[in-house]
Length: 565
Image 1 (cartoon, one colour):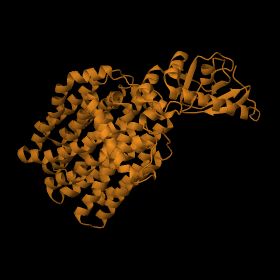
Image 2 (cartoon, rainbow, N blue to C red):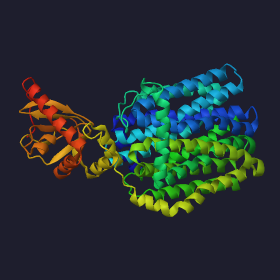
Image 3 (cartoon, rainbow, N blue to C red):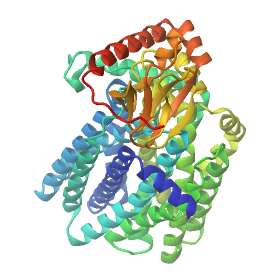
Image 4 (cartoon, rainbow, N blue to C red):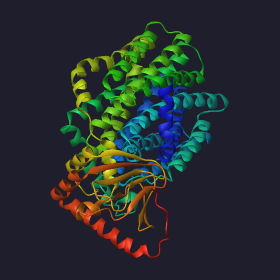
């Protein structure tokens, strides 16, 4: 558990990651709870076939909408998109609750539930694009992915368990009403997060109040760009396909939970929620396993191990279904699924092109919804042919088959996927480098070296020779010139350019007011970038001129401060 404690500590120290995690927990619990509630509602009105059809009614619009939803994170500030997505989910779940509680026709409830399922597709691609911009180091990014996996597993436990409790107290309308409140709380959590600008630059369009007619054409073009990126990048395409395939199993399992609870084990309506909760509990138990991913160079071995555990558990349920066995084996399957998903998504973040990361995850979200729909169709068919047992055995064979076919390519991807995604996100958030193209940004990102500065310590002193250019990843720093504070620096700011551009000693001291994490670019790399990139040179010189002008204006008015020896 020492690994787990370090992961939680790493995420907890970052206030924005903390808020993001709390919101994600609420989102996951709400997503799973309303899904189970709607399937139980549909099963009560027509059995497994109706439950499968209702699943399709929700999933097909969501699958079609997901790639378009993902473009929002590349077109607008991901943090704002995430908050808006949570608000949309709360509104749609609230409307569904109203229809259910008012006794509206089932078709109306199904249609509103489909709107809620479509709104859900905004969250995961946006969060995947936002995480690198909030993490301060690559290990912190992996820790955030691991923590997100834990949150998802814990929420898969809590959401369905809560659904089971609420279904026992009332009906599906009560579940939707409670989860609408939870989605609203998630929006409030992420509201204060500023985050970074979108990778492609802020744009207008309907979402931010621009011209409405700009949005559709732009969105279609950017969805196409995401698919073209996958077409040009077979490594990302393979990972997206493998990660998407797991949702065929989950889609089938969602229906099979209901069939297993009501038709095989005779556990009653709430039993479906409790079986789903056992699946989530396995992910919670897997905390120790997923925490070991932090700092790992290779992700494919744990990914394959997760597939093995998950598939063997499914096969065992199919061969010998029993109440105690089902709960234990579903917990084991949840553990395997958690390990597989966290390792796979972390590897995809490393391998996918950074400038279309949100869209790549949007394609994955769309495939996920399509996989859920396909699984929901397959489950009733398999149940009709051979019962729940045969359905579990069929599902157990899917991922091992794909892994066997793709094993060698996965190993090659694992060895070569070393894109510095955290450093790229930082450079995109810094005005001095934000306009650079992808290849130039990646070259600079690979040249950055991490620097940690304790509170009260100096980065350099006025009069020192200039040897590095710095980007601020986190913390607060102050600029002291001739004993006076003339500026403050925080995430996204860059400094140290004057001495390098003008070949002169440092014009001011820079020290950390609070513990700071920086990335440094050596003098030779900085000058090579200036010489080779006119945009970078222009922005660096503008930054230097603005800094000198600001220092001159503030020097006489700024109070004197003591500089650390």
